[in-house]
Image (cartoon, rainbow, N blue to C red):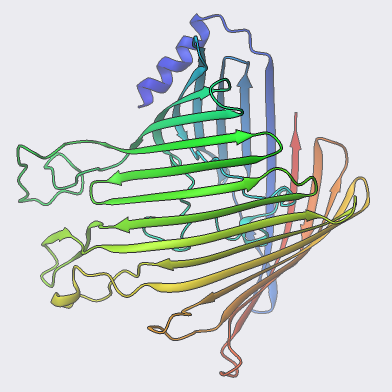
Length: 401
């Protein structure tokens, strides 16, 4: 796959593409976290991104800093070819490939814990987590066909090969059993499969269906719809279903023999909404109800290859932003997670995260964000003193060129 990326980059140069846009962005993150009553520095990775693009080709390289060293995160290149009807875009590299509107325009530079706690899909899912993400920041290659003439809108069909171990029973797989045999019918692949169909009609609807088949016995399918006919409203509704049969997740009692685990299913319902109340005031809400598969625990023989009962979890988020001035935004976010809501599990308490913050835009390219995150875990009215509390002060600086 790395050779494919290199070949794509070389093709851009040989084609003599005249790049029209070059952009660079940097986000510095500083977090001061409570510890024994004091605020200690909690190091986070900064992010730098370089993008070069034109109408027909482009490349993106994204670096994170880890202990003062640059660590490559996302990197990919793309080329678009005009066809007699529509166009074809080829993308190769390592990146997160999402399509659905996550309704997070007010997040700014805030971390996921301070705004969008979970991506669309199954919370804590084994197969349905982040279900709109076809490539999952793995080495991948996608081919996307787009047509604006066939329907009254834009139709997109995408196919992808994503790095993985599709059939780990094969001897050549890195996670194969030492004594595993390969039958004539076994496919020996180092990539899984993914696909997507999307349709967008301006001022009407934006919808997509994403499918992932990254292991032979596991798959996920998700659908998301966003209405576009409301001027002051952004919304996304989604559903995810996943069937999970992971290989070699748990060994038998001897700690050596491993096999495909018994199957489990997962599902999730997503609802996201942003309403622009006035020119200066907006409200965003996010909601997710998920049923995810628990992995078995212990080395008991009869449980060694079985999933535990599914756990039901509910996540609710509300954010309010207000702009007293053009360059100043004040906001407040509340995330609430309720786990163990099903009859097979005991409710352990709610996790609440509140984050008031302020963002100051020096100009259109430079911004500073500061806030105070208060996280209360295990809040249960039936158990006194069960909860724990942490305080974090995020300070973020970003600029772009």
